[in-house]
Each structure stands twice: as structure tokens, then as C-alpha cells.
Image (spheres, rainbow, N blue to C red):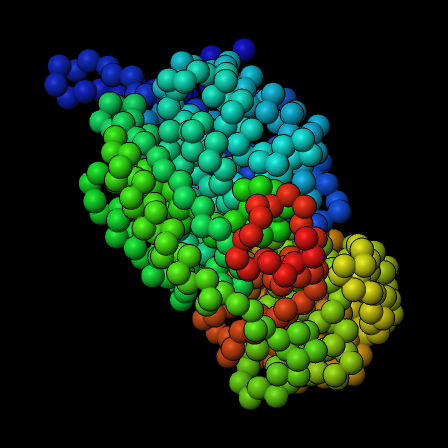
Length: 524
């Protein structure tokens, strides 16, 4: 049962100036399970990977939720939106896990049971906000996100307003549009507008519960993959389409417009980009504009053909480049896309080509333990990386000196991909690799946790002067650009192998739709 203390938190009232009567604000439930699930990562995502404790005290859970108001995340946008638009939020389970393989049924069912139970145990709700990712696969469900909304809809009935927020990389199912009242995805990649989308969702919810709008939705899915190598919404070919979506939202009849790039590492029927247009009771307008934007996306297909350098060529190009730093983006080991973080292909080339002045991060708990046992200032000699599977290369023997041991936590004060402030890469060792100098140090960071390089503080918090390095290797895709573009001499997106390889010919698909442009030559 909900406690008296929690009821006080969520049943807050405001005085109306005319007459002095108390008016109860609409109470909106908040829940969410966010996960980007990679079909090609052999490791499933269990309950232990999620940032939530089953059965946690509801007051403590609410306290943690509202403590996140200082960030620039989607849920922080919900919190600010509730203040602006006269809502009370009742948060339940809002959790996520670092991208990896599909979520286990056990984890999903446990989390969903907690969400439904908590929502039912709370005050009378007038709407529900769901913070989801849009590319979650569960062992028994190709679209975990759709299944979340289906269960919430089943529990609360057809008349309960449900507004969903999704990541830009969502693989949206048509059924999701039927089950929800409004679906809104991030417009930007790197994801710098997460807070604004949360605000938008809260505003639309406010209008629904006050009877000011009656949303209808339309979805169109162009028959293509929109390769992640081209999913930078701040440059062509996507920027004209994203700009058109923003312009369309100036129409007072249009409540939300979403251009989703999709997530190509999910072997599911809904894989691929989507256009979703939500209008105020004007289905014809929603259908027309969704088709118009989908055609704009389809018309850019020839601009999405790959020509990225291999690891060997990328390292050679970086060595020859005169400016610094060169950012080598290890696309095949994109941690934010569900890869392993221990791919060794670029590390192997850096050693083989005798590159000087490089720094990179490898997630390798065993190697960290060797460094920790050796101690700061002492010798390191161990095989690093390539330990998860054959898809990510072979271990590379590294000799050098343990330069430092660090706790691996840092703060990002700027708005970066996802809007988070607090990050944890786990205990971290910095190895100065044999043969390098203080002028041109080769620095290998060994972490105990996979950590997306959304912030340059992944290096600077460990004593690496990023602007002095000749090369920095970051295991991402588009996400790192917001952090590294401001000081990079050049960024090279590398066509490297791995669970997030940008070239679909590395993979064998079984469940995607037939005839998608950009994937015809895959190992289907």
C-alpha cells in the first residue's frame, strides 16, 4: 500500500486566486524501462544490469526520481513540465541499463510487475508518461517497448491517456501507435534535446487531461535502413528532414512530429526508420505530413552508401594527418549501441603501425586487476581486449607502466548525448605503453565497466590531456561528436568489425522486412 507520506507528496494542491478554493492538480503516473538491445551481442541483459531495486521503498524511489531534476534528461523534462503545466507526477519504476544483448524474460516480467503494481497502488491517475527507448528486445518479445505499453493499456483501459517518449534510434511498431495516445522521439542525434522532449510530452499530456486536444497519430516507415553512420541530425542528409519536422510543429494543429532513424542492430520486423506525426483530431493532416516526410527520407537513400576507412587505413590516415587530435570513432564497438567495449582491431593497428601519441579505452576487468596488483609506477604485461567473442578481435599483448589507478566516476556539466551528469566507467587503470614518451604518450585506459564515450571526461578525469594527444579512439558512433567536435582536428568514422559494425554485410538477419534499401547485400 502507498504510504501516507507518499500520498502527501503526490496529492499536493494549489490555491486558486479566485475564491480561494483548493484545486487538485491532475496526477500523472511515470514509469519506464529503457534499453537498446543488440541482437548480435551474445550476452543477455539480466535484472542486475538495471538501475533499480525490486521492492524498493516508494518514498526512496520518488526521492531519487525528483533528485534528477538538475540533469537534462527526458524525466527531468517531465519534472519541469509538470511545474509549468500544472501536473503532479507520481513516479514508479524508471530504470535503464547499458545497451547489450536482449533483455531476459525474467528481468522484463519482474520490472513490469513492479510498474503495474506501483501504478495501481498509487493515487487515482489521469494519465501516464512512459519513458522508453524504442529499441528494446526481450527474449519473448521482438518489441519490448510495445509490450510495455500493451500491458499498461490492458491494466488501465482504453480511456487512460498514455504519452510515450522514445530515443531517436527507436524501431517503432505500428501497433505502438495504436496502443499509445502520443509518441514523441528525440529529434537530435547526438541526443541534446532529451530535456525538451520531456517538456513537450508533459505539455501535450497537460492539454489532453484538460480536454484541450484530442490527439491522433500516423506512422510511416520508409522501406530502408538509415545507416547509423549517417544519423547525425546536425548535418546532411538528415538535417533538412529534421528541420522540416521542427517547422511542421509550428502548425497549431500539429502536436508532435518525430523523425526516428531506427536501430540497425535489432533483428526484428520493425527495424528501420519511422515518421510519426501527431495532430489535434486531424487524421488526414497527420497521414499527409507523415507521408511527405517519409518521402523526403526515402529520397536521401543514395546519400547513405558507405565509404568509411578500415581500421588499418584509418590509423594510417591519422598518423599522416598534420593536426591534432584525430578522433578515431570505432563504429564496430559502439558501447552505446550494445557492443562489448573490448574490440581490439584499432589497438592492434596502433601497435602494428607504431603510432605515437594515442589514447583509447578498453573494457577489460581482468587486465585492470593485473594493473591494480602491479601498482602505480610498476610494470604491466598482459593480453588486453578481444576476450568476449571472435567478433571483436583477439587479445593484444601490451607492455608498459601503470601510470595511475582511479575510481572511474566523473561529472559532465555540459549537455551531452542523453543529457546525463553523472557517469561511471568502473575502476580504471591508465597504462603508458612501452615505447612512448611524455611528449607523445600512448595511453591505454583499462576499465571494469563498459562506458560510452559521450563525454571527453572519460579521458580527462583520468589525467589524459585530450588536446595534446595525436589520436583518441572512442567506441561510439554519432553520440561522441557533441563532446569531441569542439576541439578535434578531424573525426574519422571507422568501418570496424563488431556487434555494431556499420556495414550490414557483417551480419545475418532472419526477421527483418524483405527488400530494405541498404541491406540487400547482407548475409540474410
